[in-house]
Each structure stands twice: as structure tokens, then as C-alpha cells.
Image (cartoon, rainbow, N blue to C red; front, side, top):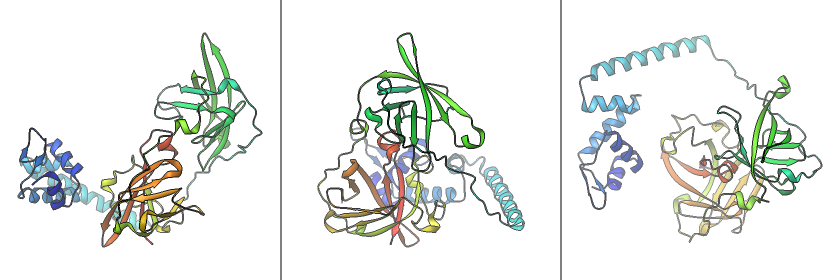
Length: 356
């Protein structure tokens, strides 16, 4: 059977099978040299299930490979893993006996007045490269570039006024002093960047930027854009109202690995109350209503949907979705393409929704 049929028979994803093939953990019985199609035998379903069972008890793929194909160190691996589990159980019992501790976050957002009267500074308009060593506070996109738009216009989480580099990410809002220096034929900017503990320490981190050009960029030019003009294809399964259950970033968790009971979601106990994106309703015919904070966005000029995609026309983002079922409950996993995606070149995050 082809890899797609085998994936369905195993209840897994093609990407997982390709990963197992690459590791030599579960290789296809035949690969067509012309089409490169992978073919599996039905007897290999039992091998996949054995891998899943061993993985479920915490064994690594490397250990599973030794168990399945080596055998020489199998007993040693099981004994080592058993000792690890027993140690964890003892630690768990000790923690339970010591009681719980109510944790309070010590994070206090840095909030300043970031709405000064705009004063122009033509020297800063254009594209700047962020300099400095690894480990410095992250600024700019993946290319470490920051753009100063004409008139101090805000894009992503950055704006400016003469002498001030302004940062606002929706939680923290603060203004950083900058000054311009010219050396040889290059123009440099030094930003005295405030850290989150600036109010306690008063310390800033100097960050150097080198000017690359002085072009008058616009937000429209800088934003990544997806094709959001798609023909409508119905999907009866997605129709209805969904409420935010949790959110995770791509660097925190692979979408394919999301399991509600294994990955404690952030804010899930509030079922959407603590999220910016709270609800979405997919309606027949490709119509959509979405609740952001307290703002309801509707209308086909703003967004629509087609099978597998939520088409956000207002910011040119095509957000893929899929529905998974765990414990008899359906979960909608949908891409969230924020400014980090549109301007920073970073992967999208994911909202997980449950039926309202």
C-alpha cells in the first residue's frame, strides 16, 4: 500500500512515516525509483503500533530502534527506563507530601507613555541592520533588519520619533533613546534598549545598527502576503462556533504532537477568556465571524473560508486549519499568523479551539 494509505491504517501522518524512514526505524518495503512513491506491507502496521507503544512509555526513538533491531541491549534499556520511572514516582510522592505552592508571576510589563508628539528625523528613515553578538536582546526580523518608516509610522511592534525608538508588543510599551553616529562612509545608530527590569535597575543595553539604505518603505511593502483568493470548497465538519482552548508557538511544540492530556495548554482552564483571539464561527457558504478581544470581525471583505483554510483578507493571511479528535472531543488547530510571521519571518503559532 502507498504511504498515504499506510498512514491512514496506522492513524498517523505521512511526515511521521517519512521521519521514521529517515531514522531507519520503519522503512518502506519498496520505493519506486521513477515516482519515488513509498510502499508498505500491511504486516508493518504491527511494527508501527509497537513503536507507538514504546514511545508512549517514554522511550526515545533511538532506544526503540535498539529494541526492535538490535536486541543486544534491550534488557539494559528496559531496566534503565524502569529505574528512571521509579525515581520519578518517588520524586512525585515527595512533592505531593510537601504540598503545593501557589506561584505568582513576578513579570511586570514595562509600560511608558509612547505617544509623544511626533518630531521628524529624516536621517533614520530606511532599513537598518542590527549589529552585535549572539545573546543580545532580539530585535528585527530573521535577517536582523529594522525599518524606520516615514512619519514614524508603526509597523510590527516598532515606531519612532526624533531621538526615540518606540517598542510596543501589546503587553509592554516603552521608548528607547537613540543617537546617530557617522564613521567613514557608514551611518550607525546606537539604541539604549530598556530591558524588562529597567524600572528596578535603571540599566539599558546599547544596541548598534548600521544603515543599509534610506528608502521610504511602507507597511504594505514589508508584510508577507499569502494568496487569499481561493474558490470555495465546503467542509461540513468545520461549520459551527469554536472557542479558544489554548495557544502554542511552533518552537514550543510540533503541531503533529499536540495532545490535550499530554501538553497542558496555556490558559485552557479559562476556555478562551484570557486569549486575544477568543472565538470563530464558520458559516455555510464560506462566511466567517471572529471575536478578537471584544471586537467582532465579520464580512466577506474581511475574511472567508474554504476547506482547510481561513482566508484573512484584511491582512493577506491564509491560515491552515485541521480538525483532530481526542477522547471523543473535536479540536480545531488553526494557524495564527501574527506580526511575528508577517514582518519577522517567523513560523506561525497555533490556536487550538473546541466547539462552543
